[in-house]
Image (tube, rainbow, N blue to C red; front, side, top):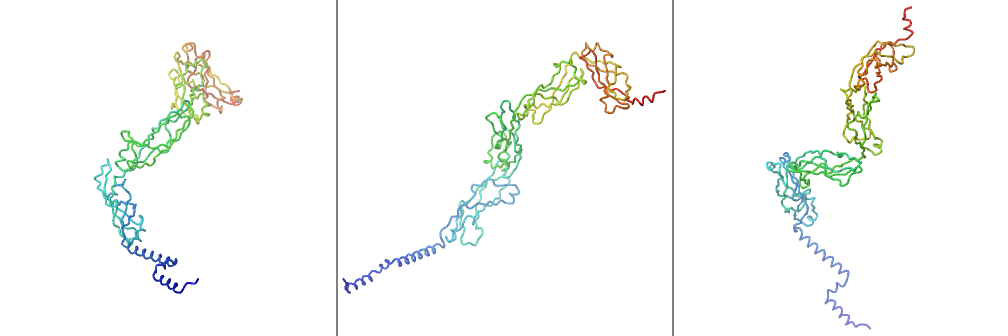
Length: 447
């Protein structure tokens, strides 16, 4: 049903009376909201040109040490704090972008060297000053620093070197051997820091104890322990000390061990000379090494042979080196053995004999003896010596021992004694022999 014209005019009049109904249009509402936000933002920005202070946190502190202090070797070893907060003012558009890297905080350190005694560190408190770094024309101002002071501990710098002492405790299991001195990756350590702290250090040691007996080689990394004169431990961190090596690599070789007997190499010993008259001191030594290697050795023969021709009542003790085979360690640490011949009841006499013969004359040669008699020293039991005379002594000249048996030569002589098995000749003997060709000798004979 069509509304009347009068009703329509009434509605139009009502709209004119209520203008807020325009916001019922979504487009108009969006535009109005944007304009309001823009007005508010510009109002806030206009009001922040001289805004409140901004705090920039954790700005590093740099302490500038005076030239005189540097020349005196003074260094700062600790600070009450290493950074601070800086308050700046300006437009928040600018201050909001400022970081700790844009600011600097310094303190000037110029101490009196007379305060340093070498016995303790000193302290000083300094005022902090903040400044702009980089773009110093930036439109903001540095207002304050909080905290505004810094306290430092200082002293003269000192270095010292100490030999590292070995205080590593361990034992090897039975039938095993561990070196008494472990191998260290370094023997010397450098300690540096405040003079007063360095002066407290008396020793540097490796302190460690193995709870179990060792049956194999061990390698550990051991902390270096600092000790004062009373043996008390010094904490390097608490004393601001720096060590060139905080730890040292330690190697302890562990090998098998066994006992071996020593024996002497005695030449030309009379058959009747009793073995119990010969003593070797020490009789045994301990050796160590790889198990397979040392198992090859039950005895070790002394390095140098002893010729019985050199044994007399006045010369019956010989010192001989103990050999050390490759791959073997003499853990007894005894380098020589003493070989003694018991000659109680033995004496020495001299006998002259003309029983001299030449053997092994080369074919086509003949030998003539210039030596007609020899005086021989003989050692033996008193009973057998009393029965000897020159006829009992025989001297043999063996030309097979001569490389070129010709002409007039000196040839070694071998001495033998009849009916005296407990006697032997001492000393070295030679005979003068002339060796010629038989043909030449025949031509020289008168017709």
